[in-house]
Length: 426
Image 1: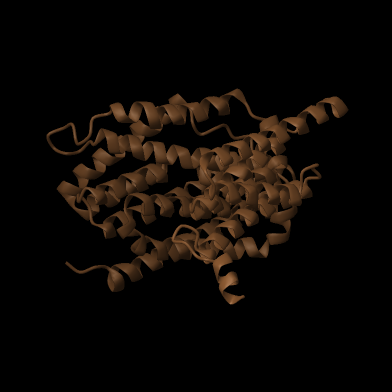
Image 2 (image 1 turned 135 degrees about the vertical axis):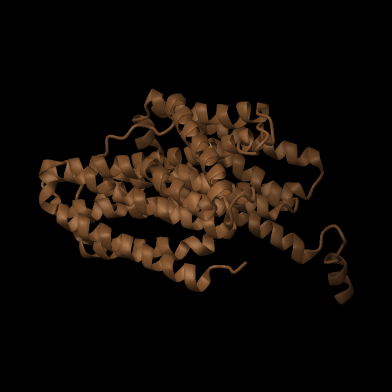
């Protein structure tokens, strides 16, 4: 009897029981995951159908290829029958559910073939995309031609023009690296555009969301817009929080740029930027209820257009060349001067330029960090005249001034600590 049971459960190198069970379990789990989302969305095909489709894909992956193809054909036929029935009954198609069913089968087959990571990651992404239907519908309904052009322009800059740009420096002094400059501009533009999309989707959830997401796109423009919009709506208290949060978002963006282009400089810049963010966080916590519930709409344009990208690129190149030359002739003091001037115009450009200088060995990571912090402080101070020039906001200007000065003092104090205690010695 035991020999018969052993014969029935005989193992083979190709189909080990534990490995096979794991593959089929993942295939079933993917089908159930996607099926639960479809069930929650009140679709005709739900948990059981998608679960069966997933495990069918896993099983057929263990069989000869013709069996897999026949099974895939059956899934496609089932999806077609679903759409034919819905067209006859309601005049609409279930295209998304049909495609999701086919994808579930394919992911199950991938899992059965041993591609566990690919199948699992794709299953999670598919479920996430399906669950975002309300957000995608709300966003797509308000997509502007300008935003479509912005997305196409990013693709053109990144995949068509960049390979045509020569590598290395063009000048004999090693001041200008065109391909690296192009990549830097593209990364900053992509970050701005991504946050602009998030602002379009989530910006209406409150002043805090609008200030942070807008600050990631363009802190100066956001501060100007909020200092005009909020006082006019009678939200003076929320204005203080909003302006400070735009600065905090700018700190986060600059730290991210530093992490991308000069990772070694992050350890020196993170303390001052975090200290300044804490001050803004404290004020935001005090006014959290008003900032979270009050609604504001930011009239911001897409940060990506040919003119804006070219202007930003020209500014970045000018700052990088000036920073390189100043560092060679004046050392750290030269880069500091360029950072002060550049921060008044664009802290993002200054941060990226300082990071690239560090990457090429023209400045140390410590100098790049100092340049980033100084540019961020100067950019924060530039918000003060934006608030003061708004007549309805002048009553809260002393509070904005006091909070901004506290931010600056916190950043300077952290800089002093880093300079004398943490600064790397030659």
